[in-house]
Image (cartoon, rainbow, N blue to C red; front, side, top):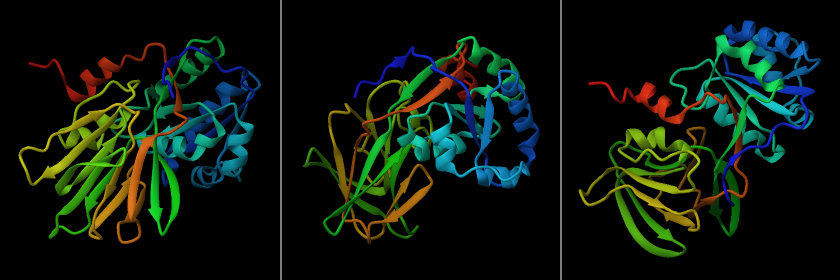
Length: 292
């Protein structure tokens, strides 16, 4: 799969879906602003039912209906809200716009005071759609395979503070390393600025196609982060004291899973961005680069 900086635009904008940050009822004013800005162009806003309940915005619609009927989706919250929406909506092939109402915000570049202005930009074509690679995670259990997708990362981690994880890693079926320590992160380039960065892994430009393997506090000074091309499939085996965490949102244990395989997903997540978005400016701002 070739991931590129797409130049295509939305063909039509008649219906937009919205999911907000869970358990935060303070964002209702922003929803009304979004709805008012869209209504100027005769565009209907559908609010996912759980979000509508939290925001006090009526009944809302179920998630599947919202995705099917919408031309694009809005994530109102932080990066976690956007990641969850991208994962859940991937099968519907709908671009996602992230409006920042959270903490750090590497992914959600539209600020709340820019809502009305950016929505106007949408209708005159002043935006771009980037495609971010995602991971396909295969969980092998008793001869069966359960598949999930990851936007940022898959983390293999020790389940108890008193135990270390012993993880065997394979590339295309061949054993290439054993990681003994607190665990291992398998990250996308987009996820390189998340847990991977905290663990000493490299920052990788988000439109790159690569698998990033970063050991977490390894019990060896020779273990270092590794960047692989996406032509490879990496797989892992470990003992029952290891847990598998997908995007910090889904958790499995190696007591239940015999082997975990990770490769590039056939489809990437499409993110709507402002033309003014500059990745390196974001790095400078968020990571305080360039300060003497």
